[in-house]
Length: 357
Image (cartoon, rainbow, N blue to C red; front, side, top):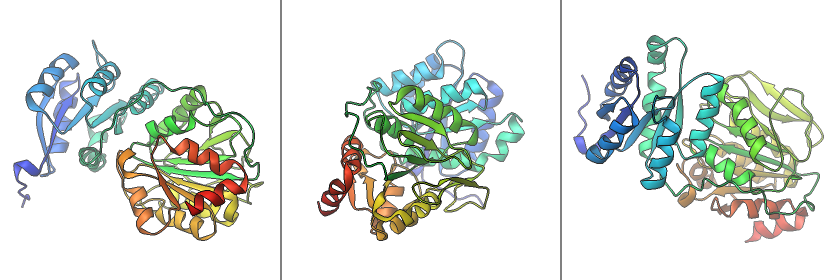
């Protein structure tokens, strides 16, 4: 028997896609959840603009590639005039990947890939789509800066023996652009787990590399850690670990999902715990609890651990779980995070002072 949810408690969704067949299948998938109400569908941005005013939905499900005003242009206008939770739908192609990364940088909460198998393949991803829409409805929208300045921080002074580990999920793409673009090019080796579909991580790393002062690359198994480099965990296929300490290498292992994810921030953080005070852990915006246990292990081993605060998170899930475990040395806003991380990199004294503040 279908559960009955009062109208006021349902997530109200507007679907925007130029394909009538795709609109129909997306509506069917979402309407199967009693907690979701599809209040309208639109074939293009102009129709969607009018329906947004009339229907005031909680979440916009937006196709990236549309004729006329494309999804990216429409998203920019929405985020400038009336920020709201947006879930993007994108084809899993090279062009679609680049566009998707731009959409998430601009403030889209989540992106769902359209599988090449069409409607049948999309139906197999129905649960993922429904969960993404409901998570988006719980997200906190904040003003997005579309300017990505190069780092104001001067080069020099970073501890060459330090390793930084970062975990993020929903809202993390925009947050990582903001954080990394404000750090100097000689930062210590930095390992990042960002939950996203596997085909998107190489494009994400390439986009960060073009934008940020330091080198950013998708991690490869056996790669040695180098200063001034950020390593993005490849999505979906394997966990990323640090093996052999600061002068060791990256290990990618195709083992079972941990905390519901592969790659998992918990796995990364645990692998860095052996470094003790020579590691800094950062847990950022995201849904769920991934990273909390691993960050706790780093914290107990003596590492400085930073958590993004609730007010600056799109979804305060992962940082909240870490905070409840006592895994966070200090909470900071996204805007203050670059300065806090840079201070931690400036030799041991900076980390000790932060740990007592």
